[in-house]
Length: 484
Image (tube, rainbow, N blue to C red; front, side):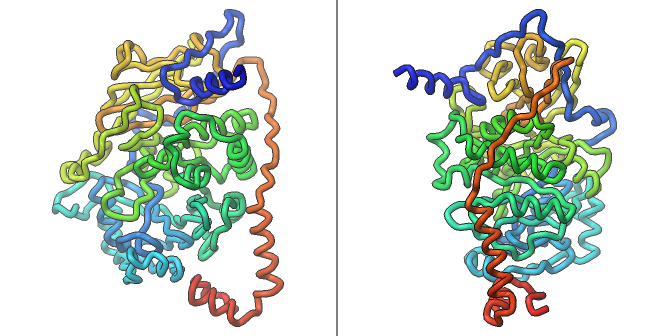
């Protein structure tokens, strides 16, 4: 009975639980807090917020639209940068025909119809990039739309459940069929190729039945925490973070919980993975479900990469199906018709306009717009909420004084408005004069990584010179160099 009560209590105080969990105030003689601000390099007066889509699809793999249609759709929604991340298919540029993986397109024939890809002309791309192209409604818009290079969704065609990650800025993974649960091999491959990667909608792997409702508010099994924490540490500098809210959040509602658990493992080991959101769109109705807002000094592909690596971004979604709202409310369904008169910068979702860190007084202050509520999260527990249905006025809660709480690892916040939710990156909190001890993270002993190595060896020993296997790779996987 006592064990059962202990488990129930742990659930109640778990990540983002409601009602709020008050962290104990530190002792008066406790060491001074030192806050590491992920937005310290942002010049809030001159840098601009750019709307970025890091995960979407075309008929090059399993989407419904051509490259040209996807670019126009994203242009209409006010995006400034977009990564096309088709399954097993490296984006060679919007003006180029990608190297296709026919078997993936054939399996999703009802979507692709095996139709022509229709890239942009050089003139069309120049118009989108410069912002001189017209929207579908014939209107003008502010700012251009650029192509994030070499996007790809890796670990394609895995059985049982999706175990995907997206790669950028490297020519890795073309036609590489996935192995269930093997995030490690593609993460290492992208790093070795000089690119960066991000874990996608991991809830679809953690909960293969995709029924995450019954798990809401519960801590995620330590197996997954250790698996992904080790991945971030082993691929530090390249594996930059993970999705915490994808599409309509139906399958990712527990990913924020997992993310907070991972931070408690990686921060003591000197690594901070960032939080991302994305639409994972396959059709025209889902391009605007979720995205990231990047604060950058300019709109270039290099600036996007630097922002992804340094975390100068906010994760934004029109949906939230987790513990983040009072009374178990879900975000209202987003009205796609709003695209007709969209605000090209924010789409009326909550937007952070400034973050100030006062290390002398151990305080973090936030300014923003389209916000009706703010919630502060310390080490995975929601400790303060202002605005909305809470008893604390929004203005009073826009500053968090860390001296009122006991902080071991990190602080983050999220804003809620009528049109969505906005997550900050974690602020790592150190204690003056106290050195963190690295955390031991055990091996997860994945069968998947061993299976990947076995497949590679078997392929090299028995199939490398097999004519039928070469034909399959040529016709089904698009390995045009398989006869070399």
